[in-house]
Each structure stands twice: as structure tokens, then as C-alpha cells.
Image (cartoon, rainbow, N blue to C red; front, side, top):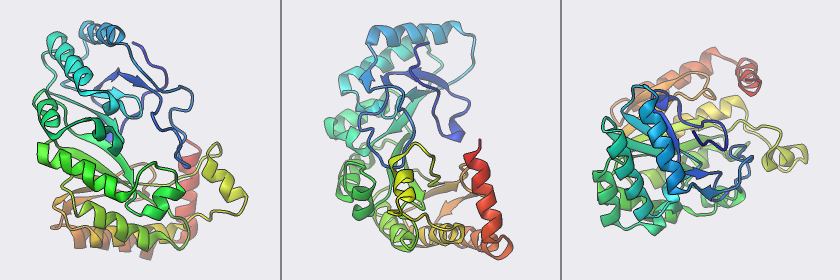
Length: 292
């Protein structure tokens, strides 16, 4: 198999097969990100993709979903994605769905009609790393787009009927910014219809521009209790019918439920974390995550 870096996938995609169709990240400039730095962005040649699909066929591995590798494999043009799906279904007829990570601007080169066709070939549940709906934070973190782009482009997914996932990155604004960040991100997602909203928490590692800003006193991380309160506010403000999951390793207590039905239950669970665990205990948890 041709992999230019380690396998990256959300926890719930652990049973999938993995197929690289791009390397690196087409943007690669987010202030907080450590992923894909070892590999420059490029498109995998279709001949190489076909070789890997054949290798998966011959592996004896049992799977029915492929999680495409690369930071944003959905950037590939419509014709390439259709050809890749055709190869997958030719050699791996048991595969019923194809997903991967994505940036919202990956959708700019695709029409609603093309997205419908991609959905019909099995593409579904792409994970869009939105992180935030706060334009000031999107600029601060160098995401490369604003909240209006998130709404405009992901509405194409809604119109096409392709199921997708939106990410919320708690703690992204740092100390004193959490409640506004929660409200602005919920505002954006309330304009959309993601099948799942998946939350994780900002955890800084030494080799990021943002960690250097911390050392220079230009960014102060949110404390742990602020993060919990931010998550509560995000859930409180999120109204679009969806499933909410905060089960990433960066979350000290996993949260899972339906919106709006389970909002109060999830908020209460987070309040229990505040009431039972102190700041120091939660700090120790995050330190353990960073040592993994």
C-alpha cells in the first residue's frame, strides 16, 4: 500500500479499510495542526490507487467501508472521484460506503448534481474539519475560509442529500473566548443539516505555530473548566436536528446524544464533571493525552 504518512481517522472509523488518494494537506497552514507535515500535498496517480485497491482485494480483510487517506481527499475533481469509486466497486464489491476527511472548500469544484452522483456511488459521511464558525478565530487560526463559506458550501451537501459530519474544536479561542466561540459555531451549524456533530478539544503540541504563540505570551490556553462550560454552551445553542458526539481522547468524559432530545442530559453530564472534578484533575488528564 502507498501511504506517505501514518493512518489518520476518527475513532469510529477503526474498522474501515484505508486507501490513500491524496498525500498531505492542500492547505497545511492551520496554526494548531501537527498532521501531515511530513508529506507535501499531491494527488495520488490513479494507477497507484488501482494497485492499492487490488492489494486490499487480495488482503483477505473483511470490511464494507473505505476511509480515504490524506487530509482532504475530497479535493479531487469529480471525474477522479467517480473513477476511483468505479475501481472500488469493481474490485471490492462488498464496499457500500466511502468517506474521509475534508475541508469545506473542497466542495467549491463540485456542483450539487455532481455531489448527488457521488452520493449514489457510495460517498458518504465525509468529516469536515470546520473547527469554528467564528470568523475572527478562523482568521486567527489561518483556516483559509470564513463562516459564510462553510454555510454556502455545506448547503450543497444538504441539497445533494449526502450525509456528512461537522467538527467543533473546543478551546480554540483560548482563555476568555469560549462562550462566544460556542455560540458562533452553533449559529453556523444551525444553518445546516449535518448527520453528526463531532467535538474534540484543542491540545497543543510543541511543533505548532500556536504553541510558539503561547511561549511568546500571544495566546493563552483556556483552562479546563472553561472548556467544559464552552461545550455546555455549544450544546445549549445547537438546535439543528443531529447527533452530537464528544468521544475523542481529548475529552475527559465522553458525551453522546441526540439534538434536541438529549441536550439537557448532556449539559447535566458536563455539569457533573465541573462539580466533581477540579481544574487540577482535568489538567492532569490533558497532560496524559499529550504524552501519548
